Length: 138
Image (cartoon, rainbow, N blue to C red; front, side):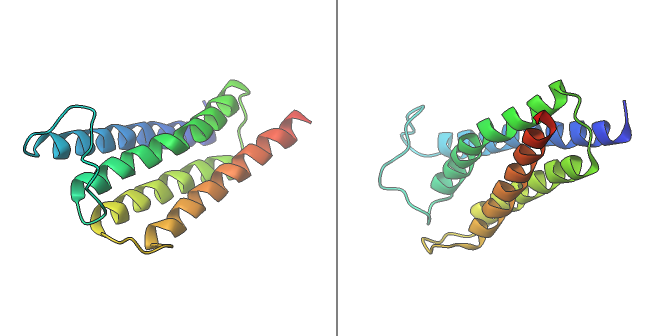
């Protein structure tokens, strides 16, 4: 295995660990609430509630996971090895980690919030990866 492939595999693994951490934080913060019902978030919660923010962090990551996971796994299947691609995987991971930290730390209804910029950085990294795969297929 090349260093590039190993680097991308490592970033992908850490992304999956981050997803597990987000699930645990969202699940256990909600479960600690009085009268918590599994699978249901109180409709009255908003950004001032950590339960809401941790739930939305996890949901937002899930909403964006299909494109990222699909892109990365497709690249792995094609044995696509590129320093730019590997860097994009790391940029995406870093952007999602900062997005998560900001979502946990800042309770704001403001749009765009600081986390929006990191969402967009991650999205851009994913688009670059997808375009690179498209070019490889041509």
